[in-house]
Each structure stands twice: as structure tokens, then as C-alpha cells.
Amino acid sequence: MFGWMKIQIINGPNLNLLGRREPGIYGSRSFEEYFSELKDKYAGVAELEYYQSNVEGELINKLHEVGFSYEGIVINMGAYTHTSVAIADAIAGIKAPVIEVHISNIYAREEFRHVSLSGRNCKGVLTGFGLDGYRLAIENLLAG
Image (cartoon, rainbow, N blue to C red; front, side):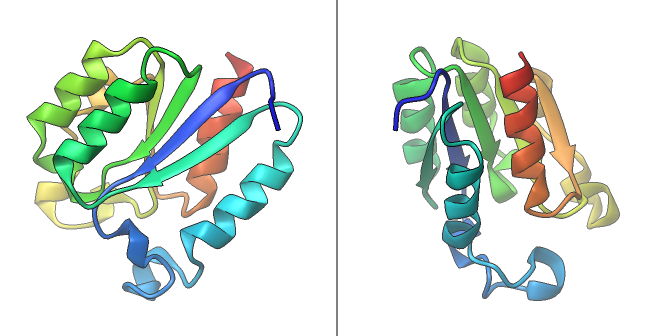
């Protein structure tokens, strides 16, 4: 499938455990299950790709790899949101617009989660909409 827009979804640490990890916070669906639905929903208008890593440097490498050739990136950096200057710098250094997504409302959680080091380098930040935050981010990228 080749659509008119290439969008990369990047998930960071522990998001490979969605559906099993703290379902009261993150829900009971795996991301792969949800991603399949997103691909079906946007068939014909976007080519969606998905990448997940628990390793900070691998997330940076993926941003560098797609950041000049894709039309948009949706990223959930997990805990690296609050700690990684390196990922924030990688986002600042690429051309593609990036939307940061958080499944839970980071402002309703521990105080250290209230700070996003990368948010200032992103087109926008969505927090607290569950998995639907990814769809909202894609809709925004498609709208331009």
C-alpha cells in the first residue's frame, strides 16, 4: 500500500507490553492489534509503519532514518519523555513534524512525569486519550 503520506509510529520503552502491563492505566489491548485497525482505517490516504524499542539509541536512530523522508512521525517515548535530552535533540534536528503521544494523562500521575523534555520540539502533544491519541495525531498530520 502506497498512500500520499508516509507516517512512522514510534513507541519507546515498555510499550511492547501494552495489553499486559498495568491494564488499569494502559488498557488491555496490544499495540499490534490497535495498529492493524489504524492501517485499515487509513488505507488509501497514508502508509503507516510501526517501530518499537526499549533502547534510547535505537529510537534516535529511527528518528534519523525516517525524519527527512517521511511526512510525519507519531512518537510515544514512554519514560524517556522525562529523561532523554538526546531524543529531544533528535526530534529538533529532523524535518518531519513529530507529534508526541501519551496513553495516560501524564499530568494526573507522579510529578516527575509532568515534564516532557521533547514536547517543545514537537508539533503537538496529546496526553490522556488512551490509544485513541495515536489516531488523533494521525488525523492532525493528515490535515497538515
